[in-house]
Length: 170
Length: 159
Image (cartoon, rainbow over all chains, first blue to last red; front, side):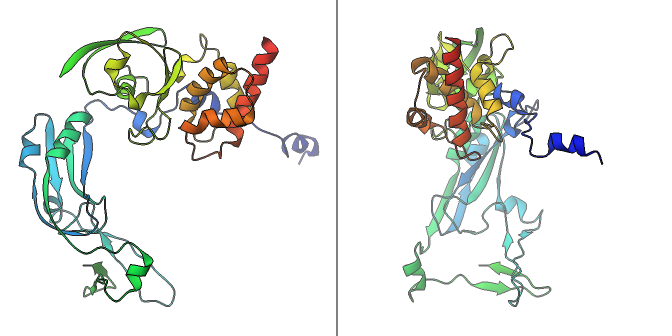
């Protein structure tokens, strides 16, 4: 160990290596990456916080020129499994709610994705997303602490699924 | 509905046949392929990462249409350097650690470049007020303000 060379680095102010690139507008951030033929994805999101999804009509969106596909939960629940989100708290039973990328049967928060529109152009995808018609049946919503501790709120049931500890919010 | 548009960006003319509703930031990023200008807030005009200079005035390009730039001069962050030599402002940001991830920095640079032209001797309060349209999630703004003050001091030295 050379004591003299250590004195040069300890406590020294060292400049970063990336700043020249970043301040001149370079640097490949994720959305700066251009892949030829890449499509654009826009989600149709629920404007309602809690509702049953009665129907989703994607026919108008699918008919638009440049739209490659419009995907809803009905298209994926047979193809993929839901995503488990384990939440392990010591001394409490294991709680494993699951998560689907698109709302299945019910919307549980404002902004939850209900359908995914894939198109060749960003603007076409946005137009098609507006053309997707979703029929919602609104359900009661509680948005403050006072409401949630009163006796009138609807409690989300947690269903235990047979097998390893596994729960679903229904 | 589409129309022909020609915009001079950083000294070069870029032409396109674009929809009337195409945003200026999308023209800059997708048609002119200058991805230095960023969108940080899904086109709401909130974050300022899309700030460019339109005829030397700093503006948020997500709040303008490409057709509004037709025939006009746009300066983006890529155009702040002079023939490859970084500007004093860019140097100051490098020296004063005025950026971390750098995502918002390009909007701040184009804004402050125009600001220092108007106000070459700003106080810290004036800088902070001019930065009100630029959001930064990384730095807490302290070093950004320091960098602008350093750049202003250097400019004064050169004058």
